[in-house]
Image 1: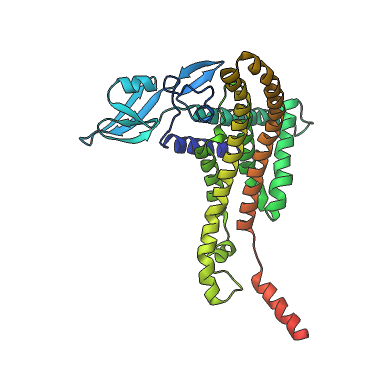
Image 2: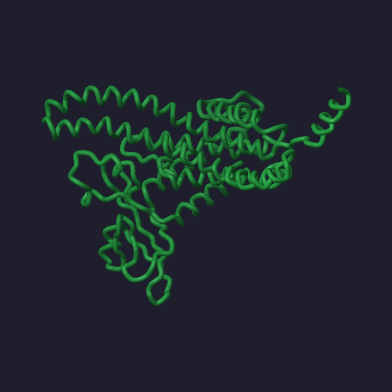
Length: 352
């Protein structure tokens, strides 16, 4: 399981690093509005630590006008722009003379993505070390963390994988589903921390996670699965040709729905909390400090309730993502006995 997690983590990280990064405006270029909701939830080129901005390195692989490939590193976005080799257009860094090949820059969402995977790695390695010592195998599990690991792992195995993937086939998919569930849960929970960023509120992150489910599903597909895609059994010949594009589109709409569902739920929750807290600053600017103090009671109470709900949603969204992944995989590995059903149907007609 640890080997699988390591491979999955490295592949995702490389994929994310290769994406063009659109960063929110820095504080110096932000508008003068009392609260910038979209700027708050967007990806940033800095990491906020207890209110202090720690600017992240910018790493660029680019090609100049002469066709020469160069790799440039800068301590921050400001230093990259000050070098004169790059300019910022609509918050996207591009070479002044040449073209960007790959932006390897660190961002706030990428850091919290790593934090989520790192927490899962530590959680898994801790549980694995306990099992190697015989704790949990020859004796009962001990400690809160190991018991939590068993609860979550058995839940994914018995309530997610086993009911949706037929026979013993579910066993080899449990590590994947557990990895998805726990990594998403950690990323969602980290997003609730003060000054933290929610990695799953980034469509790039959710798209990569959904892509893994797509590839696992398709590579796990049986002959029967592909027959249902390219030559749907039991329907007239003319209908078969109509079903092919429908089934092909269906292959891609499933992971698309996974990515959008997770992204939209986490993004909307973040926006809601910021908007409600932002009422304090809006009322302060429009009506003064007395009105701001008055509305702060409402904002803080509602936000506290929302945080509790968001904690439940963080786990729920991880569960839904892993559950739907198991459903899609189960549909791909399922075997249908069409010939057997067809013979039973003929025998039934003859007996009548």
